[in-house]
Image (cartoon, rainbow, N blue to C red):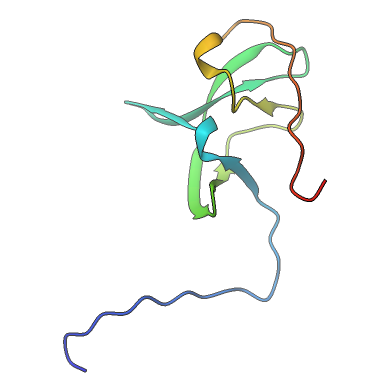
Amino acid sequence: MDGAFLTVGLQSQAAVDRIIICQAGIQRDQQGPFVLAADDQNEVAQRYIVTGDVQGTGIVMLDRLTDGETVVVEGLQKIRPGVEVDPVLAGRAGE
């Protein structure tokens, strides 16, 4: 029908490994989206990220985090970059 609109969703047959971050853990400022991440010494740092599509309640993270960093998703109002924290890992879905 001329002038009609529809939404199409496509899925790939091949699975791709991606990091999905809870939307509550992503903050934004004038420079873009960022997360507060704890490194292997449990020191918090601000990391600007590149985001992708929304997947349920999370957002696909495309770039800029490194292995071993833990993203803070709760208690964000209590910490700031440079502070040492004692992270508690959240359970994964199905565990």
